[in-house]
Length: 114
Length: 114
Image 1: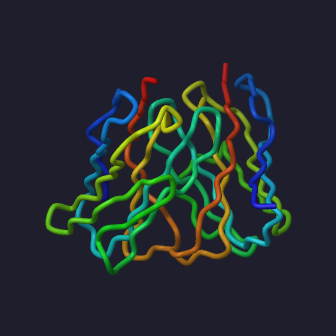
Image 2 (image 1 turned 90 degrees about the vertical axis):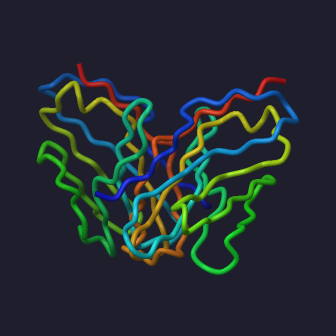
């Protein structure tokens, strides 16, 4: 299994809702990442987890709350989002955090905030 | 700030035409360079990468890229495109071996007409 699985594929939520995005991999990877990709823009790094610990937070607002409950799962909890947060949220994983270790990307969750 | 530029936002070619997509990056010390492809509805996939050595790098599906240090460029090429190459192509840079973190270019949408 060389896939990174993200659920749901599509999500529509209101600004007062609380929702979660899920990411799962069974490749034994110990580094996992959240990227945000707005329409017609490149992916931008949000968070990096290494060995289930948050190692990088790229100044992301607190309405986005990541969680890594175990080495195979990465969640992104959403609360009180704004319409400008509508984007494709991509999860990725790699064996470790050395640069020569290949990144595997999921297909993303397309989020619309109304 | 470190940045990656892809000057061609949209490219339309006929099958069998040759392809060259430009990628320039800002100076920032040691760089590792990547090209990713995103087919419609699919996840990002690594096409090729350059860390060191021969500046002409060959990747999957007949793609190659050339690192020209003096021009801060890493252009992607393919001698003869196919309809199945229709996709979005992202150049990405890792600066200073910083833990598998990538800065992406804005992407180039390639459409190949049959």
